[in-house]
Image 1 (cartoon, helix red, strand yellow):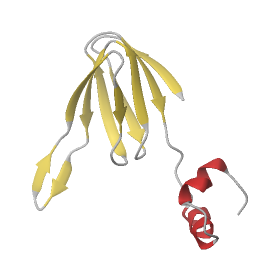
Image 2 (tube, helix red, strand yellow):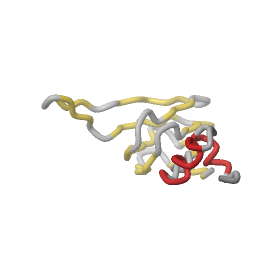
Image 3 (cartoon, helix red, strand yellow):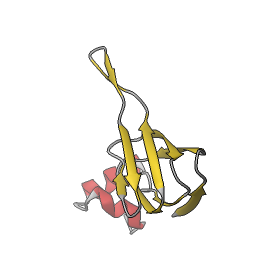
Image 4 (cartoon, one colour):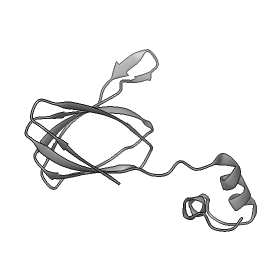
Length: 105
């Protein structure tokens, strides 16, 4: 977990894994995700968070945070799954999420 204080007008770029979370303890943030493309059409997710809000990343990628007000933010990153461990876990009948706990294979 990382805690960041971003002053009004400042920007922060963060690489998030799918299901990582941002908890905004205080302030207001503008979140701008990297553009997405589908069949030649591009769009961009544009979100404003206020104090107490929770944002969950729907996909891996970079986001840019701009503080509308001085903000205190907690970033909870999801650990990436090692593909080989995940395959072994599935082979032994365990869910892939067990890889995050570092349990025996």
